[in-house]
Length: 399
Image (cartoon, rainbow, N blue to C red; front, top):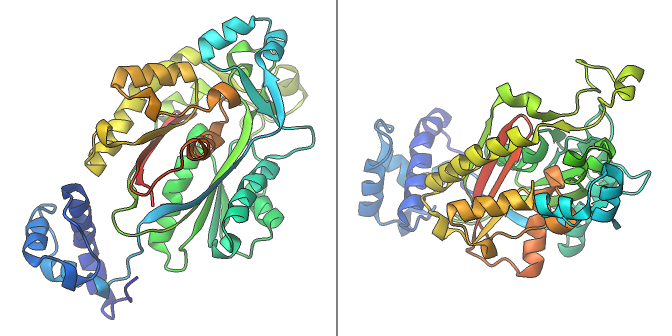
């Protein structure tokens, strides 16, 4: 990275122009280099002229003098890991619990089995297993970590943050460690926060983002609409610097709070304490309006996917793999057919693992890499819908 400018105010004034020019270069396909001598000044000036209507006064000089500013390298995925419990819960067991047939479950969900953690297991335990896979495959990874973000909506305890417990179990040094709860979109929200941390803090270069959930602990096993869908699992990525043109190219997040009632666990917070009455009425279990959620997915997922593609200047044909939150295989297959996505480019893990909530994107990313190793230059589109209702999408180029 470049050194910090001695004229801090000037650096701040010019930074917006630089970022716009960098984005403009990425979209245009003209190679961008951080070192000014390697830049074609005529092409650079043309790109600067295509910036936002009112760039900074000395825009060409500040763009060419980028080494005078302290901008981090782009955020990319350095390493990945995942973990699912050993215990398999098949549709035969779900059918017995919920009073439906195995065929009914598979026909409507596309799921044949899911994994449940054993008694005494906590969400933090699943997270630790996923992270240790990264440690086992990348020497010195633990020492690289500058911050830890855990995406979960099934924490070990109401407080402190489960991220702090994971930090302790992994033996990590003192660093920022906190939870993000965006339900099934939590992992992508965590990635967005991690990218912001790297941009805001010169001391934060590598961020560990973990998605881990244990929905088996919040299932009403007689409710066929929920118990048939969910399983337990954890996935993790180590984010860090990658060369220009790789890593995160675009990111979008949104929330429609007016629809927060469509899915959730009613009791256990300040609005409805987890008392005897709440337990007796099953308010400690997940409730959801499946039909309304399906409608939200069908309208919102295409929209946020289009937005992130537009932000990166790419089309569907430019995406090598689509790593979607594994809400429901039937729903994803329908979405792929509607948008023209080749199903071969959309790996699925839900048929064997169910919907693992905040873990499903990193778990599916790991599965896709095991099936066919990710190659440098592949464009990946990650997207999710979560309770809130919310949505998130990210487009990254693998390095």
